[in-house]
Length: 354
Image 1 (tube, helix red, strand yellow):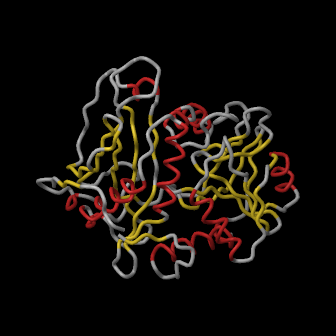
Image 2: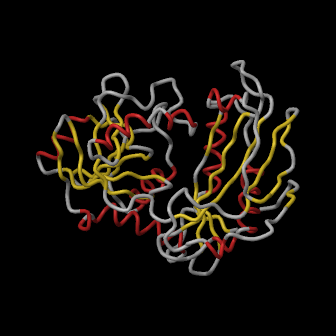
Image 3: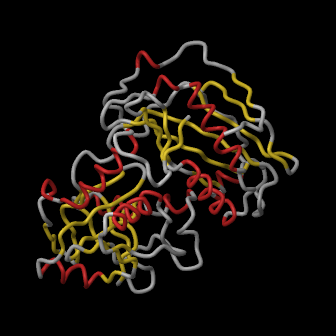
């Protein structure tokens, strides 16, 4: 793509790369040498700056600290078999961040800033991207309000930033999850479809309570009746029942997951029957009891495909099929990995080459 915005680059004096484990990095603990910053001031986005990764200074009265005026995205870069650096569905992440910004009364980050920023940052830190199996460079674009003002209103000034870091698997083993029937993640008319910080902060307490009972994550249900399944933890969730792929429809309470859309697209392309519809908790329990539930898995950028081995509901733990024998979810993961690595043709136009 042509770069139509000025990008200044200030490089770090000494790289952390040699002292960093790129083979088995812990998710979200290690960051690359540089970051990108672009400020919104006086009603306009300013020039982009690539600078050494470091702490930033903000006012104690910053409205992000008090009112969660923040949005973010998450995507990954890979080094394919041709030694090219590629990003998976970059443009779709740019568009989704625009949706989040509109909901949170923030100025939209133009696609040119989003894509140019990521492209130029990855060029500077390209040595942080390996082709070791199971690894990638996680990319975290985010936008925060910058006004030092305690009044509740949209900010005048904002900052858009991008940080990156090497990551391995988000989950190291199949998940044990609990169907949540007390707390709610999101409500109709709320911010559930946006990637905004408050959604995730509100999920910490119920997730911690589940973890104390031996579960890894939750399956969220609707806020009104707790009878319909929505998401699992920070992922979309999918079910295979009688060889049909079923997932809840996107809407106010469910994030329009990019991995979700990718798997639905692959499944349809392979001729599989797909249903996007409300899924009752009772239907899932009944399908387990009748032996019709073949697979359950979470899908998202961080985990890609996370197999679920146990579902807890009303004090009963339901054990699901052996993970190693699951042909559908493992097949989807294999197809995605092959597209990202360049082994398989990208006929869907998902790969963006840096």
